[in-house]
Length: 328
Image 1 (tube, rainbow, N blue to C red):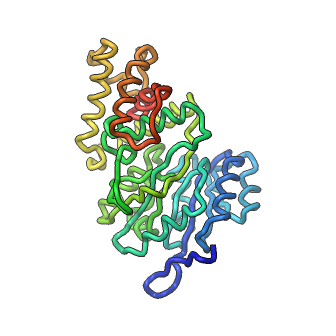
Image 2 (tube, rainbow, N blue to C red; image 1 turned 180 degrees about the vertical axis):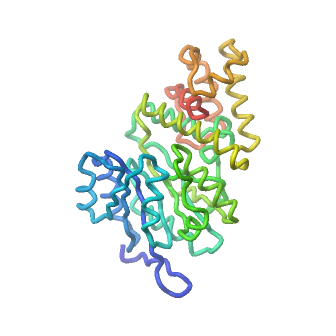
Image 3 (cartoon, helix red, strand yellow; image 1 turned 60 degrees about the vertical axis):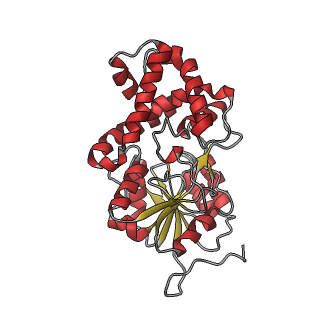
């Protein structure tokens, strides 16, 4: 730890660095995150927890590790982050979630890239930990398929040390505070895909985003099925609304990816009527359970050919279910 020196600004003073984590009623998993952050190789940074009125022992966990605890009145991730950001005076802000397992050099590997003034934000991949259940592996296969995610961040296949990107998930990313202030932080009231919208705003302001392919964050997936469906429904709804306001989010490959799902449903399920567009748009279809094995094979093959997840296995045939919910 003593071998790693803090990143210095042009005036020779260290960057003020913070890790911001929004949370609610997840003290036990947050304990794991904070324990890992307390052992980071980077020498000096603050941990800020935006706690949305948790009823468990979250505050005590924060006190245990010396993290700054903020009593947040909001009920969504975007507003929870904004409430904390408005009170912070740091130069660099790293974002993650309360259900991750941060590598011990995670902070160091993100902060180092800001020595280059061209870097407006930087992130890294996130995959389910090895010990995560079966459903989590399905989510990885679906989300990391370039075809099924229509070329979005999860489907990207970057090569090199630092690669330009259009979006980094909020579970593993870092931003310059000056840029966050410039765009007004996260979009107020955003109930899903708030990180996608933020990145669109950052890029509209003329700043560049990058990904470090080697800085992987193990991230536990939501347990199937109801919490996962709610997450994907909110994500899909927000993407639909955001696409209208920020057209650059809805690039032409999205239409191809979505058309592929409908085509697969028609080919494998014999149900290609116009209602398919609406049933899939809502993230659920009466025919989905009976067709998921066929769509599973279809998605799995595409994931194996063009995905970035750990090697998919035949058991992850449930990948298309996650994909269908994702396209919400």
